[in-house]
Length: 202
Image 1 (tube, rainbow, N blue to C red):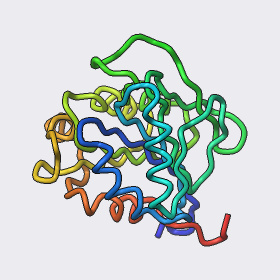
Image 2: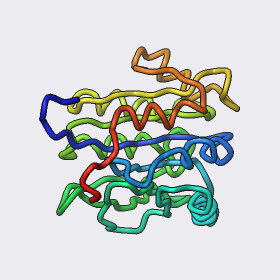
Image 3: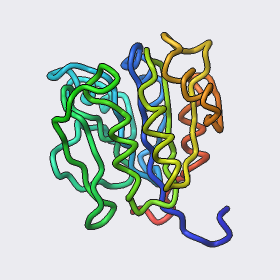
Image 4: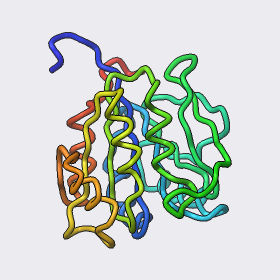
């Protein structure tokens, strides 16, 4: 597929209004052996994200958890940003780790996906697969545009018809940065096609 070259990829997802319901149609379709870690920012208040992670884990093959401070990431796991804090990536041992920051609200939200995408600029991954789903406003676009200056990216946007609110996906589409525009029920398949599954069981 990549002419014998091993590619290292990470999936970075952003979602807001209508997100919990939409995620229940995407995350359960991801395999446990997905060949990439997944970082997920869902606009949500503090105290609710841990329950969302638990509910997604109960119906999914892939592990889903609320990201912990300085946690080293691994493939085949979805790391959900804690409500009320910004989630960032830090290069380090293995595939790197995650940390939280207490910067001001941005785009009127906290956590904000723009911070997440910008933190991936210096990551070691060959490609960042950006997924922008239903939500109000334009969070994710600024961060993705910044990320694109330094990293190879591939952007999957949810289509208008399947969105609860066609704001965030519209913004990235209008910026001309969407490589795929697909219905909600096809997002997981697009992610799998882009990053693949592990063949070595690790």
